[in-house]
Length: 276
Image (tube, rainbow, N blue to C red; front, side, top):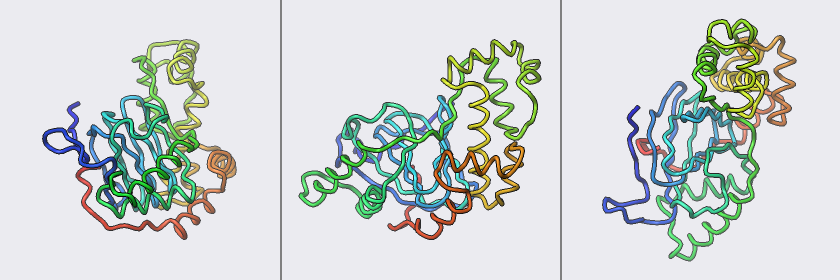
């Protein structure tokens, strides 16, 4: 795979133009930004719609009013579900200290949301400008205090386990048992269970549960009803899905998506998103 590098903060000679830059763009359902990477750290905020980030390490689903942190030089693609209002901030590497050097989805507090949207009204922010310096200081302070949320689906490296992963990614609602799936991958059930726990830090059952939740999130963002999303994702009943959704995101699916559609309209000018 050949990924393109898009620089937002550095000039052609590699000199930084500022500490932070922003890009704002709105995308239709089904849009995909192909694999690429940036020399900067990146924060993508979903004020509307759902985004799915893919890297070689796994999949991260970013619901409305959440954000994903992408460390510098991480090749990634982004797939859009529903109408997405994307607000992206790019940071000089190391400018925000203390965050993991791997992707993660974070909760966005009301203050952090307003800071992100306000920062996106500037093309660039430079700490040499007093007003911009104060914005940057508060923004960094808030980012260093964020909570991560478990909306990722890690990928195992083992080739046999990956055959199961690829099949289930294409068929998230598949009811086949692990025992049946193992017959097609050339490994025993016990071996695959051990591989998943060692390489993803999740049991296979937990990994599959996470896949179904993330798939249902994408369906809901694309306009599917709760019952259809639950059944297509492999849940035995809508109530089982609603219970899991509320456990992970703190609200029922209907209330959660109503909340962002009412209050989550993004501000900031639209631009093209070739650099995202």
